[in-house]
Length: 367
Image (cartoon, rainbow, N blue to C red; front, side):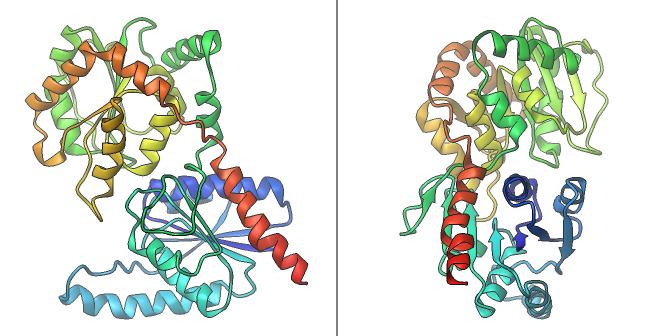
């Protein structure tokens, strides 16, 4: 059984794809799994690290308007489609997670009459999945999408380390929090603010946080700052035990367990993990793509477990004001976040159940 998985570029596409690949591998030991990705994307490092094969397509972003980029796009997309047709030969199912890599894979699967399954993480679907869902036998989503008729709400496929951490309660959670803080070199007592700017980090968020770090420390806030590889800066005149700067952290469950509240972007994967862990958050969404990050963040702000500061409005003083506001009302925000913790922690398994039922098993019955 040959499985092709497409959806590269950002960790938001790659991490759920890996969670699903691992579930398939655990269930179907004979499955041959191949990823289709992009050079220079997160998948180039993350996929081989999990011992999966990966093949690359040329980067072909759909142009938003007719210009020189349109002339470049046409030959690149044509090459990507031809290569996809070759890579999908004798494939049992093509599984997509959106992103520009997925579009030629969906079209090639349609041409070759190969069943498609896809997962859409955002409340506002991107172009690739809007194309793919018209032909897909399985359409799984994190949140219901009003414009799509046939869909299964499964949640967001997450790493086992996150879902297992999200299940902890009572004394087990207290102990795990202590262990996580010790691992990260943080004090066992005190309120921890986790700062992260997406999988690659954000220089704009970094600069604002560094500027207000000393003030936050005076307010007895401990800062765990995930700055992103190559984006670190020397921070002077702060207690190193109360401001910890890390370029990249693979064990994100440790950061979530150590934290009491967050500053974060609002990609679907980030939102799903924060929801699972039940943490109040200050979202600084990017106005990219179809505006999905703003829509993602609004879900939590409307519930009362998050605040939103638009990236275009971000200054150190505005950030300081909102951090202090959240810090002063942390008990109420934490209660709301905890009440609304995601209970959909089996998304990878549920998605593979649907693929098995509607594609793999139905294929066997036809044989």
